[in-house]
Length: 363
Image (cartoon, rainbow, N blue to C red; front, side, top):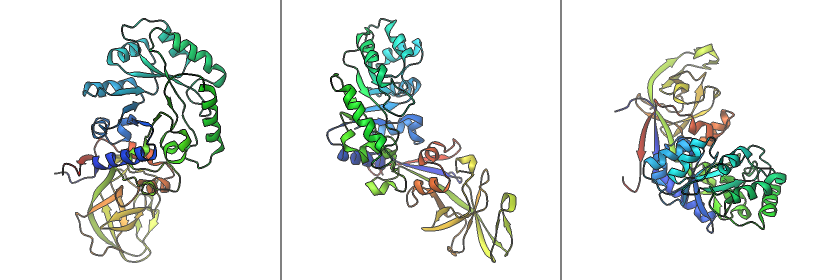
C-alpha cells in the first residue's frame, strides 16, 4: 500500500466527458486527442476507456505505434506528421493517417511508392502561425498531395485555432471564414474545432471535432471550470497529511522563511512537492482541500512536502488525505494560482506518483 501521493484516474469521467462532447457536436465524428501520455492520464488507458471515440489523435508516430502495439485498430491521426522516410514507411505499415503541414513532407510523399497508400490530412495555417500551409501556398500543396501516388484520394482538410478559448474572438471568426473559403470547392473531410471550438464555436464543428483538454474534464476558457459545461475531472491528485506541529506566533515556515505564523497555530505537512509535479511557484494562500475544507498553502513548495494552515480543521489527523486538484478542487483554480494552465499541471505529474484507476462501471 502506497503512503505517498497518488493520482486517481477516473475512467467513467472520461466516458462521461466524451458523451458531453458528442451532445455538443452531434453531427460530427470525434477524434479523441490523447497525445502527451493522454494529457498525463496514461495514453493507453485513456484509449481503452474511450473505446467509443471514432478515431484517435496523437502528436508523433511513436505514440501511434504504441497504440497499434496494444491492438488499437482505429484510425490514428499523427498531428505532426512524419519527419523522415522511415516514419513514412512505418506509418504505411501500421495504417496510420498523417497530417501534412510542410513542403518537406510533400517531398517525402512524392518520392516514394507504397503498396498501401497513406491516408493524409492537409493542414491550412489560418492564423495560428505554427504549422500548416499559408493561404497563398495551400492550393499548390493540395494539388501536390492529391497527385502523390503514395497518398489515398481525397485527403482531409484541417486547421487549428489559436484563440478559440476567447469568446467571440475576431481572429477565430477570421480563421473559420478563411478555412471555409479556401476549401469550399475541395473534396475531403474537414476538421477545425479543438475543445474551445467544440464548446464555444458551433459553426466550426464540421465533419470531425478534436477534443483534447475537455475530455479530461477541464474547461478551455479562462475563468471557468469544467463543471460549467457539465464535465467531470478525470484526474484527482491526492497526498497524505504526515505531520501536525504546533507553531508559535512569529515562527517562519519553510525554505527562505517567507511566511510567518500570525499567532500560535497548528501547521500540517503534506507529502507532495515539486518532485511530484506540484508547482513550486504556487504562492502562500493557494488552496488545498483537506477533509472537505479548503486550507491555505504556507511558504514555499519543497521537493517532497508542503505546509498548510490547519486552524480551520481542528480535528485533522495524521494520515488524512488531501486533494491537491481534481474532485472538489478544480485544477483550473490551481493553475490560475500558479500562473500557468491546467494542461501543464496534468501533464507534469511525475513517475514517482502512484496511479490508482477507478471505474464506476466496474467498481
